Image 1 (cartoon, each protein chain N blue to C red):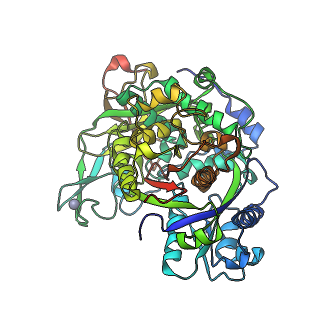
Image 2: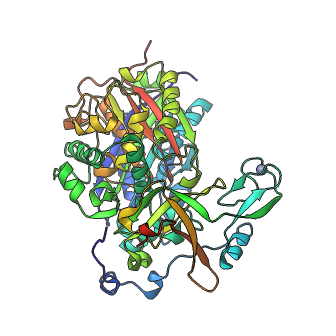
Image 3: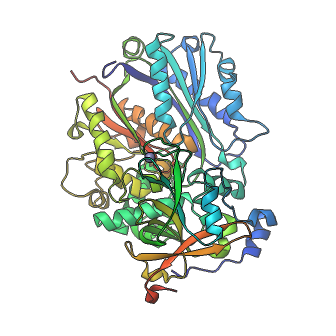
Length: 159
Length: 400
Ligand SMILES: [Zn+2]
């Protein structure tokens, strides 16, 4: 899945893009999601667990989507997951992401229950397989924001 | 309310494509006038004007604001209008606005409602469109920072669907080929002058594996309108009314990660429950349907919706499509206007063009795309990141 390399400077000139157009969008934490991003910055993966029914919500919301209780705690996740399904973006993505092409966006299943969208990194795209085992890695994209991403547990599947 | 209480008596539609000089207001005005003329009614009989909110507004001349502040009834001289409203729920707007129309009719405020959609994407730059669609289909906090796009969302579902059902990429591509064949018969379709083949679709430039450019819909400007009335009034004023015979809806999620159905390959199983309710409400079944007017937006969604509709054939959906059974002349016509894939994706309007095409087919006025003797069909739409699904059984007679 090599794909052709695209020179972002050419695109920039062609479409008259500003530097600002090439800045990647970052999560803007909310009052109820801040603990997730704070932990991520410390390279810890945490999840919001309802104190009343034990349900884990991701994305976290103001109250438990299972029982409506407000009380909750943040629990440490195992950092393991499996690949539910994926796509390999090769073209036509928002301009800030052109430098990353080709890259994998995937739906990840956590053993704790929830599912998340993330990138599979450090992987051989030809060896991606639904159901494969993954482990979390942390990408410090700015001083403030760290994005949890995933890579294959099996070293022979790493790119 | 029973089956067949409401009917559509006239439609209007402009060509889909890139028309930067054609404003949304101009589209709305034009399709309204066409629908009024087509229905053969006096404009003053219109008691309610409903417009679909469009997406990507131009802040300097906001069509949405003009519409919900009442520009259209004045412009078309609808002197009997007492209700103005805008309804929007993304790709499901065509359904939610029709429910609004049905509610107004049921309330007794009026017996004639004009429903309108208009969209003009081409006024925005490629970058503006890319930015909007980076956030429209995906969650800004949890998905967009990872470079998620609408195309990757559909690709993720396609990967899952193929793994679960054994559908091949050629079958997925065949959906695009069938859509193009229908669009070739449609004067208002965006892509109606160049045939495509499975081979060409599969070998087109990869966008988001496993989807190529020809497996992704293209945005276009467009619009349509229709006149809805009570069945009782319809029989008086129209010689070929189209009745709403049964409906059913389901909502699942905002972000795809929270879909009620966890296996992206099994989404059709969930939709089947809703489709069954729509059939039951109409007292008809899939074997009675002459056409399946599906709003796919991506080929995999067409296959998933086909799976849910109980098409009376043992062959899986992908095989039916590859065998040409869903295209012109096939046993099970699907998406006879070419839908988002070839008719063009007009934002909140894809469901409108599907609905308007359904009416044309049942009125026997679908031109070169006419399915001979079409009497009953099932129509569907849905919005968001495949957040919901709505099915409507329609017919040009009310089954006794
Ligand atoms: Zn709870």
